[in-house]
Length: 154
Image (cartoon, rainbow, N blue to C red; front, side):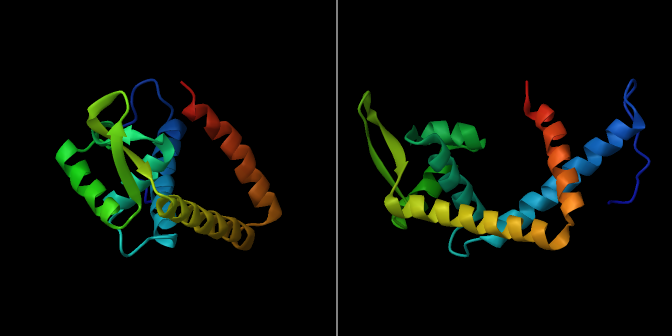
């Protein structure tokens, strides 16, 4: 873990909660970065990978909705989508409810790309857990994930 810094703990919060929050953020950040590296496509930028994944999750969506979901300017999303369309990973079609707008969807190639990346990442993570942890440690992780699931609830 990172070296303990002398950070102030908010009033009413235990030192263990503050440390767990800090350590969890650091570890998840590193894990997220490592998982991205595993299937990192050299022909796509991180923004393009993120947008492609977002289109896969949302299904048909407008560029402005995707920009909002990604927290980027619509012009930036338009540039990203143009690159993905040029590679044949997405397609745009008129919105049946509003012909002035276009809906962005994945092509079959885009769907295959996302699924292939997901499978590569899943296999890497499964193998890493198998190779680097004992059965007892994996069970501890499973128990910890059950506890961490509470963090995702409103």
